[in-house]
Amino acid sequence: MSACCNDDPRIHDIKSKIRVVPNFPKPGIMFQDITTLLLDPKTFKNTVDLFVERYKNKNISVVAGIEARGFIFGPPIALAIGAKFVPLRKPRKLPGEVISEEYTLEYGRDCLEMHIGAVEPDERALVVDDLIATGGTLCAAMNLLERAGAEVVECACLIELPDLKVNLLSQNFT
Image 1 (cartoon, rainbow, N blue to C red):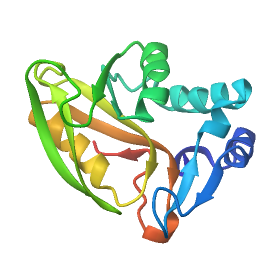
Image 2 (image 1 turned 180 degrees about the horizontal axis):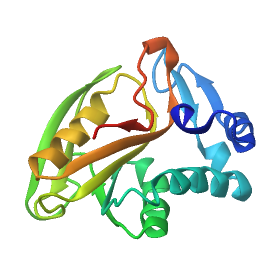
Image 3 (image 1 turned 180 degrees about the vertical axis):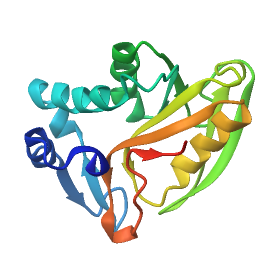
Image 4 (image 1 turned 90 degrees about the vertical axis):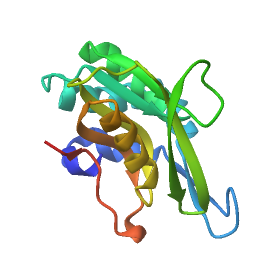
């Protein structure tokens, strides 16, 4: 969110609604809990609206949401900009044929999967997740979409962890 509109008065409200939970899911992790933001309908709407305002005129045809919190923000963004929503899931959660991409997390390894045929060549895609930490999950999502022939326009995340020196928020790749 920081790369798009820091001076927007809605940003302070959104930031104030995100709870930090120390040592979750394991010692040393400062978990950024967005469930507190979701409890406030106005703040939740403002969050979605900020993304929609940024992407509504970028000719995006695919919004790819990363499991699980990308499923919260991705569908309303997709509906508002007239794009389809494609879920990027953990292994063995999608029926049918999938393509997979492994990646490294700040506290382990994981994998994302996407249905074969969910994305067509030359479609313009937006990747949505709640948080960027190491960038591994976003890179895996981008790899999946690009392997299917899509052009990844941007990655949109609500939260970045500045201590990890990563800044891909609303990063333009075109």
